[in-house]
Image (cartoon, rainbow, N blue to C red):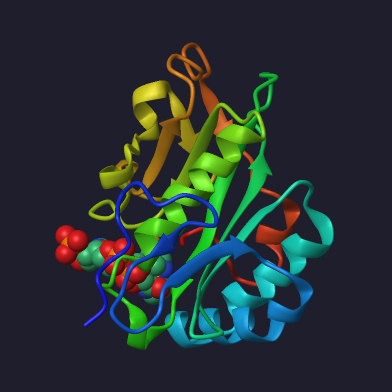
Length: 193
Ligand SMILES: CC(C)(COP(=O)(O)OP(=O)(O)OC[C@H]1O[C@@H](n2cnc3c(N)ncnc32)[C@H](O)[C@@H]1OP(=O)(O)O)[C@@H](O)C(=O)NCCC(=O)NCCS
């Protein structure tokens, strides 16, 4: 059985396994069909895959990373800029992330999240928000965004909308409602990942 990718996994890191490494790298155009398939299989709908395509086309910048194993894309994560009206802050929204069903619970999702956060930090972003499973994201340091006075525009329980400061204190005094890219408003999607 493969060893899970470790918490220190970074972009272009290789995760050890007996058979072959799982490699994290920037998404390339040749990956687009496989990325679509991973999201469709993981979510059971093409909505998230379509969102990825829309963000690729319209959002700038995006952080878009794939996990590759034996030459196949087995996971993908995307981050796109969000805004907090009234504040000049560089904040990314994490959405969506998916791992192929047969490769879940092997550390790939965690490695993608950690590598993506590092990439956002390197791009000069000070914080990341996510709307997702409250049991999953706290392990990366996410806390309910209401602690910073920040809310989602979506009608969701407080614990599922979370924020992470990439720079200590970055969200201090930054109260308000986060706005996602317009691509999230197309179709029936909210930014739950
Ligand atoms: C969520 C997802 C990206 C995690 O990727 P992964 O490679 O399976 O995750 P990892 O192996 O790094 O981490 C596994 C941990 O995540 C937890 N986890 C996985 N899916 C979860 C979920 N839906 N809710 C809560 N926890 C979840 C597992 O319980 C496990 O916890 P443990 O380490 O305490 O045992 C992947 O399961 C997936 O693609 N799911 C379907 C799509 C989806 O729901 N995406 C959004 C999730 S917010």
